[in-house]
Length: 542
Image (cartoon, rainbow, N blue to C red; front, side, top):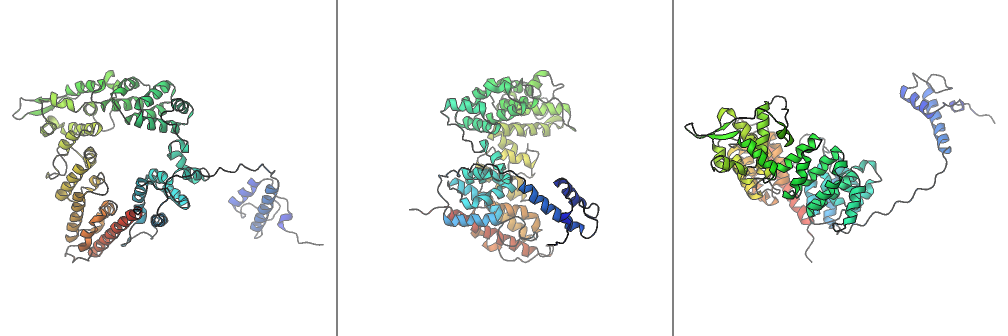
């Protein structure tokens, strides 16, 4: 029987790698072995690859069947209500940019509601539907800010799934221990064995769990193996002592001041300075107090500053970094570190018994005010001192956007974080009423969600004023996005009057009225949707 001769009858290349190289270079530059250049060369290459594939597969020796994976662990939490499960599917199906970019219209941005949905579901203790786990892991893979809440909601089955898909391995890294259970806190022998044999992430998880319940046990474990740990591991372990930090930690932290790693020494010094009664804090108070005093020879009592002239070995041991960053003077750099680490309670004694507010109000000679007040800001945040934070923030209605001590919006935001939620909301609301929204975006980020009534009213009123003034609407898109996620859903009724397209002033941006109306419609729709979500996640009363 005769047959037609094809390129497959030609000798095959010696290796699969040669075929791949030929395909990458192209048959115009290189032809398969045994075939001539020309229009038939691509077909010859594909035929050769097909035969080589069959040969490779046929040449594989059969291997023993792999062990069947163990079933996924059970999740004992109650299942989601059916309406909430459907809502989750809708939120996970939304993707950023799905509408092709450009104008968003009045439709809510569903993916931005997912963090709040997860927080509400976790607060109610629901388990994730198994069918939603792949989409949930994909969403967490694309957004690191979602991972803690998403993995908590996904539960143990997500870790089981993550072992089968390399794209989801982040779940094993993000979850301390990768699913390995930390021994019970009363299991002393199990804790010690886990600490000695566990992986780094597992040991961090163990320290974190112990510090929240038995801080002394965590510190003793760390002290036993401290000398044999790597520098980068010592730094992470030391950072875990922030939880439950107390006076009993001082001896261990004092020893860490002599560590061979500069970063470890700096972290130990920072933790000690957060303990106002520590020996390091007292040493820093003496050093800082020798640099700052009240000059009574002037017409008005004035703070005089004499910055350090050197950074000695004792200062370096206590965490002062000797080398100043580029553009900073050495003396001001050293002064800032000393003042930042000194207990704030010591300044009243050293400055004539004055209160924090009276101290901050004093003039500072020789242009040292910015440096001194900035250091006090950092100290107030580190030591969580509300009285000093109030003094440095000043009144929100002050004519200048900055307080008497804060030098930036970022510092004011950090100072606000030391206050209670209600006081924080009142301060931010007063700031918005005086200075508007353009200066307040960072401050809104530290307010509790949903925003308290004073903040919500201030934001809505400021947006209304901006709309009536014919302001450029797109410059408020960031605040609008925050309002969609943070405004209390009960505020939706107050927005009804803003849904109509307003009459545009002569100096308004063309089409601004339509954009404002659309933005408020989206805001109202989103608030109603958030209210519905909370209802769906609330099981009916039996």
